[in-house]
Image 1 (tube, one colour):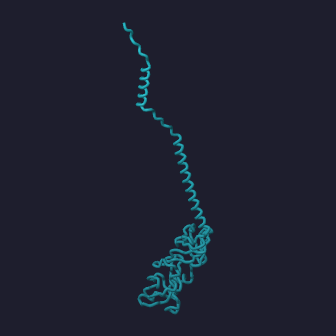
Image 2: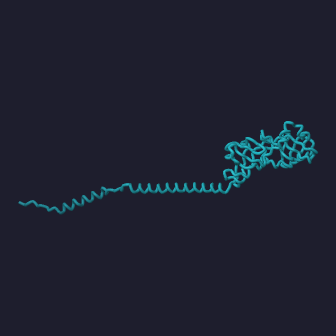
Length: 247
């Protein structure tokens, strides 16, 4: 995509004649199609009077020049009635206030970008906006959200403020602070919840250990039998022996 300012002052070259026909003076916009309708040629160039080139006649838009097939594609605006009204209208985007259908001011159009191959306006750069007190730098909005391009105001769809692409530099300090605070709060909340579950887990393990009944292991069978035998032998040894009388 090419910013509109990059078109200005580019030399215009005719491929068939190999001539430089002039320079780009300005661009003619078609609000209905949201695209470039024509290029205005600087009269100080090859021609003595002002001429225009329908954008449909542009072959290529390069970094250093714009090319067209032949010199005859540079015409007087009076010879192109379908473009004459647009030339007289002198519609512009840069410097125009941008407002949503619900009356929210997005800011002022600072630049617009064009697809060189089709002439379609792809997006508009906005600056100086105070959208809900947060935007104080640059933002971009797709031309798909633009409903009207007027002399005084460019109107965008309802809710299009949510479709803005904002660079970090375009965020006000209050919004940055809010984002930081929100992130910090989320971090603290996560830490608190994690600590709670850890403590709860420890309590559960402690209660489990306390509630678990003690296991008493009985004496082994061998030890019991041995003690019984020894007790029996002691009783036998203490019992007096009665001798039978001799006769």
